[in-house]
Amino acid sequence: MHSKDQICPDDYQKTASWLQSQTHHRPKVAIICGSGLGMLADDFKCQDSFPYSDIPGFPQSTVQGHAGRLVFGELKGKTCVCMQGRFHMYEGHSLSKTTFPVRVFKLLGVETLIVTNAAGSLADSYQVGDIMIIKDHINFPGLAGLNPLNGPNDDKFGPRFPPMSGVYDRDLRKMALELCKRMGVSQFVQEGVYCMVGGPNFETVAEARLLHRLGVDAVGMSTAPEVVVASHCGLRVFGLSLITNKVVKSYDDTESVNHDAVLEVGKLRSQTLQSLVTELVHWMDINNNTA
Ligand SMILES: O=P(O)(O)O[C@H]1O[C@H](CO)[C@@H](O)[C@H]1O
Ligand SMILES: Nc1nc2[nH]cnc2c(=O)[nH]1
Image (cartoon, rainbow, N blue to C red; front, side, top):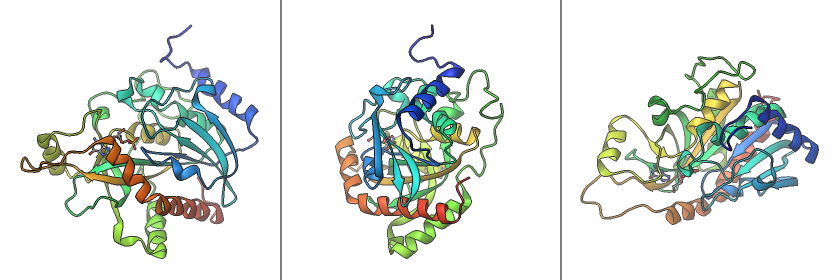
């Protein structure tokens, strides 16, 4: 027996086998939806969907704007799986639990992971509603020793000391920028550095200033652990942040951020985000370019 939050090496395979017994879909692309971004699965054809509570080994989503459903389906003919709701460290999950689905995806045959999130901007030139293609990340919890790869290394998934430079695939970033141009949305698309902090509180002014000085463009409370685990097991990674608020950097600023406002911005950009993800998946398919 092991505690609820401890993962045994066999647990990933048990969950993957259960899913394969429940759906005929064999996805090559996995999408993780950020806060208020669950609509990314809306365009899936021939959907099979599973509440997380029905999936053996899956944690539960507890955050508003994270439906807690795994959806399989086809996007422009390419088989995908989408997490409508992710797990965050601040919900009380261990980092291996928050990233559990990523290794399950690997065992399902997924080759590319698309991560999305809602984030606050530090970059002065960014506006609320901008879409940031993630070029790189700073994993603050990771730098402080909170890493999902802590513990015995499972060589079946990847090496003990995985490199993390170039983790956000260059070709996918380049193609996404090109697609944004073709879609006529370049005026609100950025490319920048995402920083993960632990949360759940938003930043103090001093913390915001620190992040700004460090060169962080956008900050959130997720994504980095999923990306570390995905890269460790050889998945190709692409990431998008939706800028839902400007992080308060001045003591004179009386505005403050809240989660409802974060969720509202998702609705504003839902169509563009859906189109971008769909076109990117389609591009991977026609280039037979998933891995
Ligand atoms: O990163 P996602 O899941 O998009 O959620 C972001 O939005 C929530 C705060 O509003 C935090 O969980 C933050 O990480
Ligand atoms: N840490 C953090 N996470 C966010 N998620 C959405 N907006 C924010 C923000 O301003 N700060």
